Length: 189
Length: 79
Image 1 (cartoon, chains in turn yellow, green):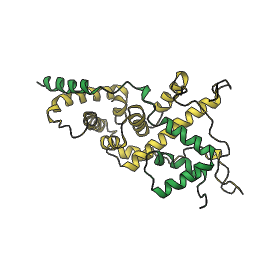
Image 2: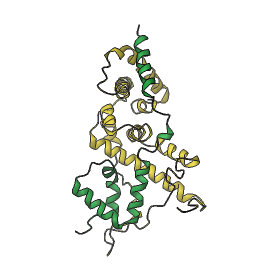
Image 3: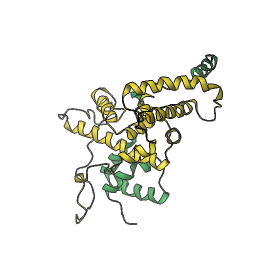
Image 4: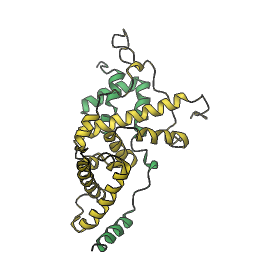
């Protein structure tokens, strides 16, 4: 909840206040909860309303969709120099340097240092991207739930998720390729 | 059918593909590319692995019974 609130307000302390205020609002409004959306979505709707109001008072408030648009620089998912040039005679735009291999989640992608690399990469994302990947891939929300809670279109949600996952993937790849070669593929199953 | 997609385009389409948001013909073109491209296949698998797999970074969802108790407790706590 603090993660979401921080997309709207400046600073963690204010975000924590927003979360507290949200719980008070939840208690006040719980009789009106009819179970038409999930409890989770309903609470986050209240959270985003409180956060936007608070953000407006801070004169920093913009709707989530505007925040998303402002931070979208149209950056590529992968550095263009990883691909052969467009005028390559045989394989234009194909991989020049293929993706580095790394352990799958089952092989320990989320163990130890890689886990910290992923957490840091998420924390460093622009706020709208961070919020969407946190809700989708960390909290496990569906695309529909995210669109509803943040009031963004399906296409917008996908673009933010795409940018966020691409950046996190790049961070993992940078970390993995910077490691001294050791026996990560032991057993090479 | 010719392979019109280049890898540099494929990496921008993977999320749409994984989200099931592509038109069938576009998805088929992507799959056609993947069938002959180990680099993009690896890329897709890495993005698929990220999707939804980061939940261990977060605590678990409330079990349904606890959720119902929570709603009941919130209702009782109303002034």
